[in-house]
Image (cartoon, rainbow, N blue to C red; front, side, top):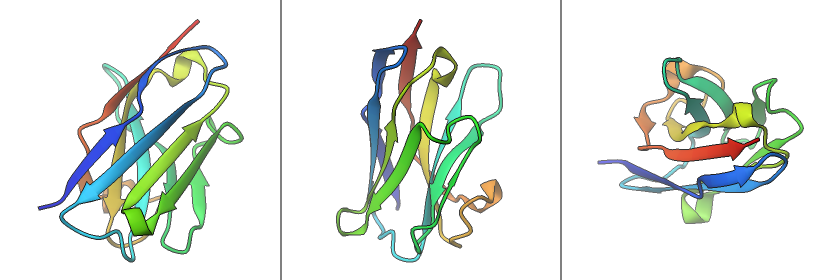
Length: 122
């Protein structure tokens, strides 16, 4: 059984930074794409960033230039460095695994973490 555990969320002021981490157990990330998504109450979960096995990356327009996704295959981990945070970045952030390595196809993500709360105060 695959388990994904996110960490690194918290409360930060506008303009601040946070680094989210996601570690997996139960399977390797070999050949997969890894993604970060976020959700706020009353809204659908939205795509934030993804990194394919080839390390090609994709970002939502709203986070381009501020967020950076990376992966450490040896540690079975994926990270999201978030800089210049804005109040509209406040959400629960989820990591997910796409075993088909498509990256930007929301429907391909099969395994999901429980989420970590990020709150950006104005």
